[in-house]
Structures are given as structure tokens and as C-alpha cells.
Image 1 (tube, rainbow, N blue to C red):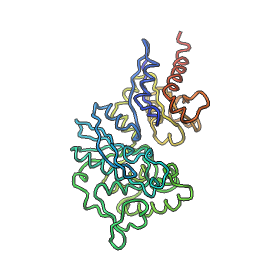
Image 2: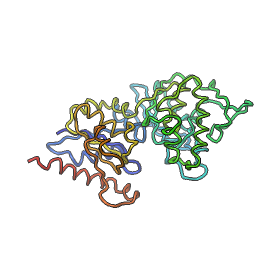
Image 3: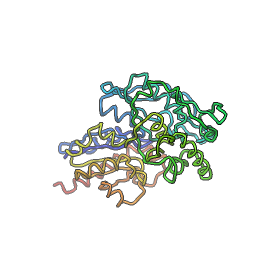
Image 4: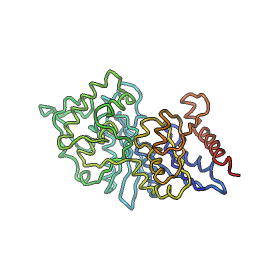
Length: 373
């Protein structure tokens, strides 16, 4: 029996490679082989997923986080393809937020992502793939653009500080100072969501509260980002995916000509995962939490849809599940296994994730081979 294990990282507890190694250790024996695949969908672990699939290098550079503090941002370098892999969460990650006034969405910035892109240019990259998952900003990419030389002005041609607090003041955007090396590089956005820039499923109403906006602040912030986005959309129409990473996707697409693609589809392509699934008997996947958002091409659903095409069953191990099992089954997930087996706090569940996944996988293996003899 051949098993492909492609579990996404479980935030705060297990990386993709750690989770897949647990599956390999549990299931592999004389009759079963397990091939672990480091996987991601544009969020946490994207750099490692690409580096692992193409024998790339891990590097790092000093940048600034969403609060303006210096931080070390890791990136991947694929020498043969002259491609750099970035994760916006390395500088704009939600984990940098602390609930204080300085980390309010009105003041946080994606400036560090602009610095990351400049690093790619200095490295001599011809292409940069940017994973946009896990960000904590809703600045519509204004900070990132500033990091690339873009200037912002009010109605009287006075410079405006590029933070969301000043959305209403901005009347003109100047892109003439963007370096040629930035303009000439191919940019691919690996996105894990299909959200619009505004609206019920947009950057503000879908993700604003988890990034620090109160319920009462949503309408005003929505109005501000709608107004600012019109400056970016002057020569373009809004499309699905523009709302990824608090609107960073929109800025990358309209100003730098970036292409938005499904993060999981791109990782699947680089890992040659479809061919491996076709040759397998079972696929094991998973993530920390499975809910309605998971149906927006998150790792388990992206893999399950692919496996379904080739009639390969899929088991998903998750920390928590919330949603209609029929919807997940239609997407190709044969069964979902929550790994927490007893009443537990989130802190304890994260701390015990390795043990919980190990025990859950042992139980599943026992069930799978219950009637073997």
C-alpha cells in the first residue's frame, strides 16, 4: 500500500514536515510505504514547501514588521529557475499583532513586504512567488508600495504618510520612482483565498475583526478602503482574489502586473503531486482548523479535489472541525478525523499536538487494517 502524506502546518504547534513525519512513522511498515510532501497554500510554510520540492536554499534578510520593528524574514531561492519565494507573513504576519493601539489596523503597514521584494531583485531573481496567507494588515498594499518607491499625495500635492489612517487624504499615487528591476520582475501571487477587495466576503468584513477591527469600526474602514482601492483600479476592474492579505493582492496586481493564482494549485504543480497521487492508494492531509473557509481552496480541499479526480480516498487529520460533513465529502474528503480526543484548552491542544496526531493516526491505522487478515 502506498500513502501520500501532505498535511498543512498546524499553526502554533506543528509544521507541515513535522506532521507528515508523524504519519510516516506511524503508518510505514513492511506492507505500507509513506511519501511525506511538505505542503502549503500560500500561507505559513509556503517557502519551505517550494524549497523542499525543488531542492532550493533557505535564506534570510533584515526587514521591518507590520509595526515598524526590524525582523529577520526568511525566503527561498531556487537557483535553476532564478526564482525567489516570499511569505508576506514573515513581515506582515498576524502573529506580530498584540492588541495594543500601535497594532491597530489603522496603523499597521505592509512596508516590510516591499523590502522583501527588493531583496528578491537584489538577489537577481527573474520571478518572485509571494504567498499571501496569514497576514495581519488591511492596508491595501499601501505600505508595500511605499517600500518600492511609490509616493502618495493629497489634493494640495502634499506628501501623505502611507498608512491606512490616511486613506481618506490620498488623492494621487505616483509610481514613477519604482525601480526598473521591480517593474521587470515576474510576480506571481500564491493566494489561499478568493475574497474580493470589498463587500461581504471582502478584506474588511471577512477578515477585519481577526486583525483587530471592532464590529463598529467595520463600516467606516470598508468605506475608506473602497475609496482608496478606486485609485488602484483606475485602469482595471476588481476581481476575485484582490482582497487577499488585506488588499495587498490588489496593489500587486494593478501596480506591478502580478498574476493571482491558487496557492495550493501552484504548490501541487511544483511538487508534481498529481502524478504521485495517481500512483497512490491513499492520501492523508489535514490542517489546524477545518471550516467553511477551508472550502476556498485551502490545502486539504485542494488536495482532496485532485485525489477525487483519480478516485483515491482521502483522510484529513484536523485540530478542529466546524461545518457540514456532506460539503467536505463532496469536495473529496472521505473522512475527517479530529485529533483532540478529550476536553482541552486551546493552549493544551497546541502544546500536545504531536502526541494528539500520533495517537489519532495510530487509531486510524488500526481501523484501516482491522480486516486485513
